[in-house]
Length: 263
Length: 348
Image (cartoon, rainbow over all chains, first blue to last red; front, side):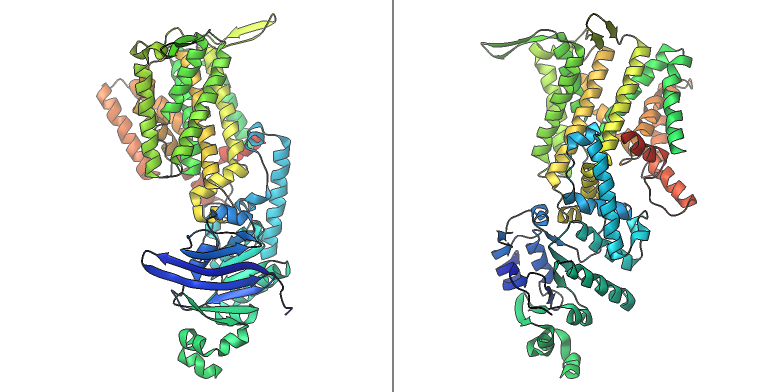
């Protein structure tokens, strides 16, 4: 793998608290342009909380989050998305009652500039733009390989395709940094393999990826770097091979059985 | 097929005055049409953004009062030595003012109450309607209070020196309301099938996901409140120039309830829903009256029918029909029934 250059996202001293409970304690890490960085750690380690703080869904109690020079602290999620930081959710999250293509069209929100007045007046520019959006939407669906589902209701998709749709909605927003929260959770091994192939193509298209994932095989194979959290603190940060051998990671996360295999 | 169904439905509506002789029936249809337009506007908020406005009649009433006051002219002290006078203006100008003022009220109410949504929005809208009613009731100098605004002139369109036409009488008003209804429908359909409408639907269906792709919550909720209020204001203005008298009772809660019933029973979040609901619940009381049973029984029948529909078809009539069609045909999402797809064609 090429050595990635500048830091795209810098998280510095991030703390997140829920009342008296500290979910994340002075967390510091960088995501470099073009890399795939995985956040791992046992349940409750604070991975999703960190995701939520970066994307504006949770306030940070302390610390700074900077993306390409712009501080994200205090910005609304929609503003952060407009800066190119787009996420998916841990629990499957689509617009269930809409068609697959409609889901993508919603995702393309930032790629269109229809003025409400032009819409109401029915100007031809709006019709042109709608056609262009549908074309773009189909392109995104082809990219993740669910173009044949275009007119189906999102709620009628099989689980694996549903998770692909989630990623497609996020991709439609044209992220430069994509945050994926356990994208292959619940997938079978075939689905996971095909998802990893898709992820490879997303990365090849120049998108930086921050991944939270429990599937260790996938994490180790796809990541340039892995950050391991335990109880709200970073306990290790390095390339996958190093993390796999890191004694604290093995103790905290992979467990004794794994420790023997790896050792 | 769908285009044909729409054309047939429109042809049917346009032909009604040709074969319905009864002026009373036309009157019922006109009032039903006006309330259907109001229900369509409420549907934009309730059905597409999921925000329940229980003060929607406020915009309707504001539209009625503003257009009436502009067309009648007024003279009012805004301060002890500050008299504002307006000479009577053409009714069409009054209607434009009605649309504008209602829209601005929708904007203000949206800005204030969409910071805190859900139950708070419901409370704010109810209070708003009540406050506006009290203002209309007590600001005698402007509104004549309970004495009502009388002799409101009918809408007149003219090209100076060439032609002039006043919408006097049932037939003319029937067509006026029908055309206004089509315009309102097209405006709402265009909005719903655009970037803005998708943003509203997205916020209703899954707000966290919608914001994660860059949709600004307040912006689109306010937009829908503005358009919704403006259309309700237009309906109020139509009502005022047709009935030719406006009193503070126009702000009564029961009118909002009627609109909500029309939207919910017809199917909220569908373009055809408020039309189906509006026609059913606008015409039903009259249909029951023709059964020659006591008035108390009529209302019992009305209530029972409403409960039956809601319990059998909780999503409303139009979504139920669409679901039924989908179950019979191949599994396709589409937009549901014929009217829904036709909406796209009309809108483009």
